[in-house]
Figure: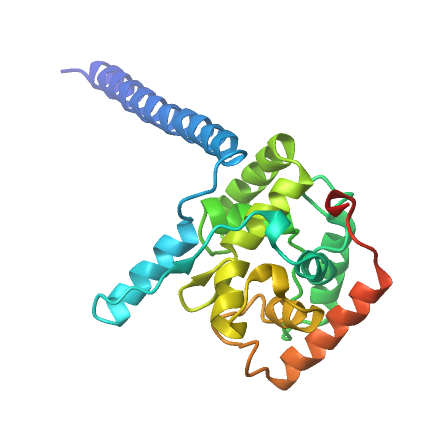
Length: 247
């Protein structure tokens, strides 16, 4: 076989392999897009039965605790959640929640400037409530570009399909508040022995103050930092009114 003929065969085989890889990649991408759209549409009306984070944490518990899985959650409509809980979440996590479309670019720029100036210290994030919801509900913890790209995709979808009230409702029902504790109703029962609708300002701000490290901090045994953050949240709440979707 001549060198020219062998080169042509190699080129032909390479085209087949590349075409096969492209078709598989395209099918996976299309499947991801269609599935993500379907999930966002369904969860616009139905409570999510479980989240990706719950699955990850349950797996970690099973490995670490010899198959013992702790999972406390109870879906609660927003009308049955204390308004102070909603106000505390916005005051602490996303003060521009009502006006942005999923991304707070001013907060992103401020966080970038702060982190550049304070290298080596704790980094400051700028994720909106919608971004946090997208990560906790559909994705997994991490800082890879792929995961951040998927988070951005789900954030856009959620903002397009859901209104702000629904975003807040699902967020408060799936957010992690402790080891195996998800959603404000389960957290309220566990820590304060009361329903979410009866949470006081102080209790609501304590729960939110433990974010984003609910496995490290506790609202009933607050550290000095958690106490400081709780007081800061209360001040922010006093400066802002109730969001329009609660009226």
